Image 1: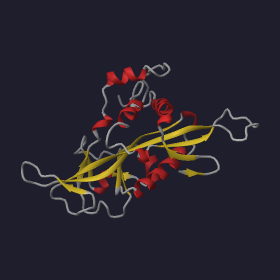
Image 2 (image 1 turned 45 degrees about the horizontal axis):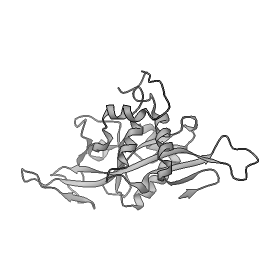
Image 3 (image 1 turned 180 degrees about the vertical axis):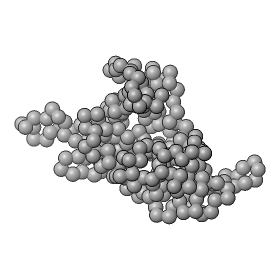
Image 4 (image 1 turned 120 degrees about the vertical axis):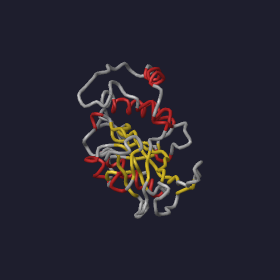
Length: 239
């Protein structure tokens, strides 16, 4: 747990699940698509073996409705992030032999390796608290905890202008391709070493873990338990 005079970062507990899913829904609604799927992704991922409970973290702060008469102002969850184990498929001809790289023999006889590492997301900040530094505060804490848990690097998709402030670089600059865009620069596919030299001599590809892809009909049913919200087609959405 991390605590300062205003904010506390701690591990999510089951009593938080509903509030965190609603927070995630509010943060992503109509951002990348009409409505969103991220709250359902989070809901499903918690039951996957690659989900990392120790890195499903919430940031709490004082509730706006607290009164001066209260000795201890009520605190609310303002942000959340989840992490999961993932892997880089190392090219057979790639050099280097990082810790965590496991052999996997192909039918052809080649032996590519799976480099165990982590990814994260969704990361959510309550809409009225965005652009106040809370996302970076939470992520910086989580990345250090991931390093202490043995993650040599982290890969994810996002905006380098924001995540660059947390040490992320375009992954192709470190020799790691995005499997869904193998011939492109994929400027949105980012990586950060947590262990210096972890990616030295490594070339390979990364594919988003399967739990990030959910059934949209099931997501629609799941969404019915939340307060109704209007889905809108807005400029800048991806789909």
